[in-house]
Image (tube, rainbow, N blue to C red; front, side):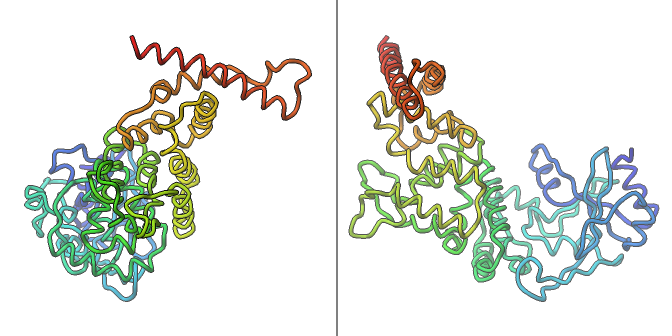
Length: 418
């Protein structure tokens, strides 16, 4: 097994220098638990590197990137490079890699100063030509250079890092993000979805959408969320403000209680239909559940969403207003069974978290939802009396579950009074 020190020494013997780069260095300096080490090599060309590391293999097409086994893990090793814009989007670059490119030149092509630092593998010397460490101390997000605008998805990456780090963007960053708007409209939806997915997994996912909006590109990237801005709500129920502020509030509350990205996406989507409410109806949003399904469908046609996300979000959109208001045992029984049916996509506890965030509390039957589901599932069609067949079995099953649900509701209501 080749250790990192042995790797650095082998690079040095071949005439080059090895550096750890990017997020690992940033997280290390922030006192976080860094992972996913990437390396950049200076002083070697492709042939020299392959001669020194014959067991590595090439994975990059546009520029030399290798995989090598270091510290018993497969890690990415890139040769230092420069880039020149010659088209649009992520593929609109000509990359140059040679043994005379310095680590400072390689770092200059990167997006944010906090991501543009390197650490020498052998000496642990920090290479920080663009003051990334200072920006970490100051808590700001700053672009390295005007090259930020050359890959439009860097605007989304900046917003994602805002969700991860909670730093303050500089005016220059906002300006450069805005400059990416036109090309963002031409980007493959897969790249935009990838940034959304990562942002939803970070501690403050609302910061992603807020920074996109502050930069003036939220409408271009997520028009369904942008449409919520300015959609007034009754102040007595929503002192937080418009439908956008409400959606951000619910997303923040849900993110505090679950790391499940699907649940967070559902929280984001629960009131999508409010973006379609006509001005003359405001501040009321009658029928926004039905409209929300149409908006979600359009979002999916524009950017194919994972089926699990889609099913769970549809469920939350249709049930988030209905669930807290149910009182009849038959309706409650049906909802509990539907919660169980969707639980592979959205666990029962996560559905409860979303409803509680949106309505500030839960009715008794939702507090004990899993208990109720387990009780109801104990009754199956196999117990149906002899002679009941076909559709009649389903009717019998529903009646029996309704009876049991009525008894169970009485039990939990008595329980809460004690």
